[in-house]
Length: 221
Image 1 (cartoon, rainbow, N blue to C red):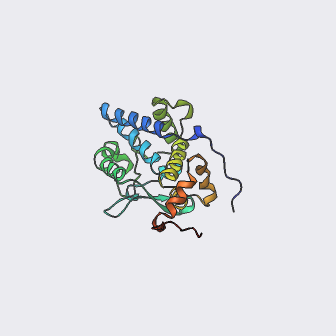
Image 2 (tube, rainbow, N blue to C red; image 1 turned 60 degrees about the vertical axis):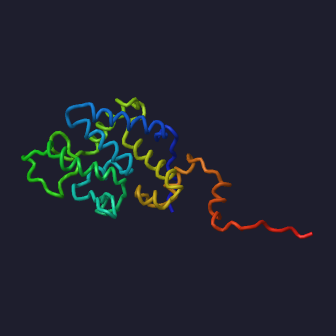
Image 3 (cartoon, helix red, strand yellow; image 1 turned 120 degrees about the vertical axis):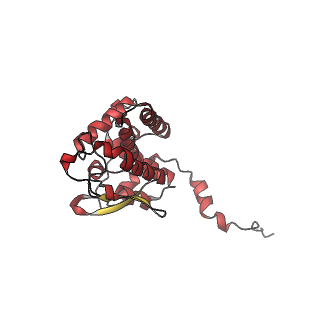
């Protein structure tokens, strides 16, 4: 059993309206700017927001780790000590990753770094190299600051936002969120539950909705 889980507060993740504002900002910049930089900014933010990856996991992503088939849309994530887990992402995001690999990523390839292979880093910086955690933090901080989130800007803000949204939008599916985030124990994942407005009477109704009696119980006289 783990010890006391860390504590989070509402300012450590984005609410629904803040999330929409951030996405609108990075998508607008990607459409408005001529160079590929804003497109990469958008992809980095969306990948972190809708996968919940840790910074180190994001930096270890390879081209071959992005999976998009008719049955599955996922990332093969390398954890510490060589362990792996599958993180499922939206199909539309997988298609954006595929487009980036075909159209944008080649613009950053540097032949001095050797031939491009499926085992090469997925997200490249302007020098054609993989991001390390410091460089990723700086880039995310810059993008979030430009979107009006300077005081809260960090990679962890996006990971916590995913935890909150995943729990809320999956209907409190604790096991799914735990697996997505790579938590060792569900008690850690359950920290997000305190921020989700759950109506116990409606939940109780939903559990037994299919078993509702066709006629009410008759009282004996």
